[in-house]
Amino acid sequence: MTTIDTTTLDTPAGPLSVLVGPDGAIRAAGFTAAPESLLPLVHPSLRGTLRPYAGLGPVTAAVNAYLDGELTAIDEVPVTQHSDGVFLTHAWTVLRDVKPGDPITYTRYAALAGRPAAVRAAAAACARNAAALFVPCHRVLRTDGTLGGYRYGLEVKRWLLGHERRLTAS
Image (tube, rainbow, N blue to C red; front, side, top):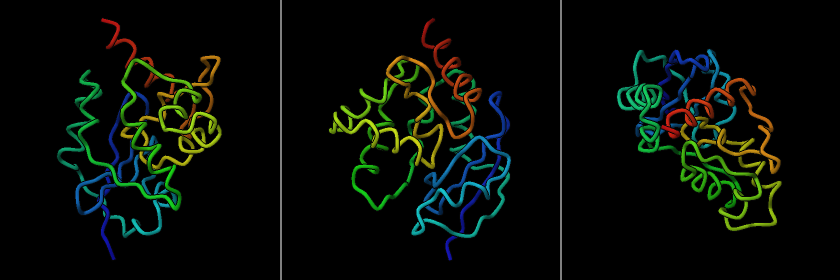
């Protein structure tokens, strides 16, 4: 069975647990102190046995750089997510192109993903995203500009958006 390395990093938004496959790609990430709670979010074909690991090298460095103000540092970290549907996988790829400090609406996200009428499908892609922060679903807002939902709570989403806004405004 595949071994998935995991670590939990302290961030101002709360603990960030990260699961990394043997290829160095993120399998899951989320603002929780319980990395095992992320495993059900991972596609069954990508699951494995979790192994606590103190530091995940480039992944830890990218998160620390992001927190220190280099917002694009997380863009270089590879992510592997699978879905049984083609749209979700494509939508997650598109989401990685949404720039920090410039959130978009679910309507805009659906259009960028090539299905402008599929606003609910775009929202579902955010809801089913296993790699929070690295696939920045926190950068998608409701059409009226309000936060909408976020698996890890609106306070975390608010902090992430504020962090990015502060750094891109200067």
